Image (cartoon, rainbow, N blue to C red):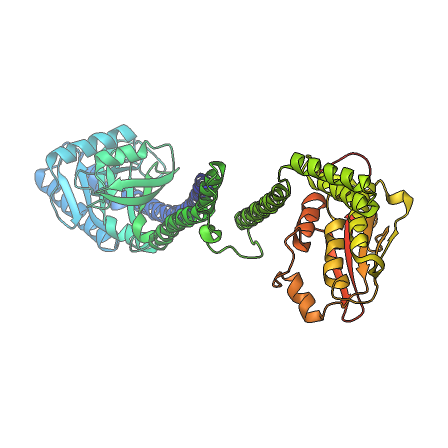
Length: 575
C-alpha cells in the first residue's frame, strides 16, 4: 500500500513536470514570437535609417562642387596652391553637409594623392584604417559598403567616380568615408525593446552594437551557431532568454537577450511553490500511508498473535479484552474480523463450560449409579433366597415385592445403555408401582395412558421412575385420602415431532414462590436419589437445549411434570 501511494504520487509529480515543461515551452514560444516581432521592427527601423544614410552618401558622391574640385586635383599642371584652394573648398562643402545631418559624425574624402579631407568632427583616423577603407571601396566599384571598425564605429564607404552632365567617364576621383553616430541611429529602436533587454547587432564577425556588449565576441560566435532561434543561455553566471533574427538586406544578425530570472520571476516562484507543495503532499501521503497501513496491520498482527495462542491450546489466559475495545457494529473489515474472532472465543468458552457441566452431570450420575451397585450378585442371591422362602411360606405379596425390587435393581445398574424404549422405561415404572401398591394399598391410584404407537420411542434411562418416586414422596405420603397418579404420553403441541410425557398427581401442589425457587435450584429436597435437575440435564445432553422438563402446579390441587423429548425410534443413537 505504501509503495502504491508513493508510485501514484511520483506519477502525479511526473505528469506535473511534463505539463510544466509543456507550458514553459509554450510560453517560451510565445515570448520568442513577441520578441522576434520587436526585433524585426527594430531591424526594419534601423535598416531604414541606414538606407537613408546610403542616399546621403550618394548625394555627397554626386555633389557637383565635389566632383569639380576632385576632378581639378587630377590636372597635372595644377599648382600646389591651386590644389590647396580646391581641397579647402572640398572641406568646406563636407563641413556644410555634415553640419546639416544629425546622424553624421564626420565625412572624409581621400583624394588620389592620399590627402584626407575631413568635414564635421575632425577626429583623426589611423593610416592603416584609411588604407583598408580605400581598398574596400575600390573592390566595390562605386557601391556603398558598410564597415565596422575595431572601435565599433560605423562607416559608409564608397569610391567616388567622375561624371559630367550626360557623360560618365567613371574615373576614380577618390574615396568617400562617412562616419555615423551609431548610438543616435539605434537609440530609439533599442529603447522600444525594453530597459531590461540587451540588443546586440553583429555582422557575423564583429559586434556592431553596443560598444560594451553583454557577451564577448567569442561567446557570440557560439550563440550564432545554435540551430535554435530562441532558447536559454548562460552569460556571466546568469541565465538569459535569447531571440535571434537575421536581416535579409544587410545580412546583420539581431540578438535580443532578456534576463530570464527577472522575466520569469513569477513563473519560477510558482514552479518552486508547486514543487514544494508536491513534495509536502508526497511526504504527507507517505506519513498517512504509513499510519493507514499500521492501522490495518497492527490489529491483524494482534489477531494473528491471539490465534497462535489458541492454536497452541492456550485458552486459560485468553481474556475477552485482550483484543482491546471492539465496536459492536463493525465499520471496517479488520474490525469485523476482530468482532467475529471475539465472538468465536466467547462461543468456545461457552462450549467449554457446557462440556464441563455435562461432565459433572455424567460424573454425578455415575457416582449415584455406583452407589446403587453395592455387590449386585450378593443382593440378587439374597433377594432370590427371600423370594424362595416367601413362596415356600405362600407369601405372595412378599414374593411380588422381591421380584419387583430385583427388576428395579437390575434396571438401575449401568449396562452402558443411556437410551431405552418407552416400553422398557414403563416396565421399570410398573415394578416400582408394584412395590408401592403393596405398601400403600388402596391409597395409591396409578394409571397409565400411553398409546401403543409411542411404546418404541427412545427415552433416557431412569427418567420416569424418579418422577413417580417424587410424586409418592410429596403427594401420596402427606395425604390421608387416595392419591391419584397417572402418566400420560401425547404428541407435543408446540413442537413438531416431539413427545410430551406428563406425570401428574392431585397432591398438595406448590406455591409460585416455591416453584420459582425450585426452578432456580434453591430448594433443599428430602430425597437422595436422582433429582429433577439431573433428569433435565441428561435430557439436554442427549437431545439438545430445546428439550427438557416443564413444571405446572396449583396449590392444594395438582402438580404436573412435563417431560418433553423428540420422538425417536430404533436403536440407541446417543450422541
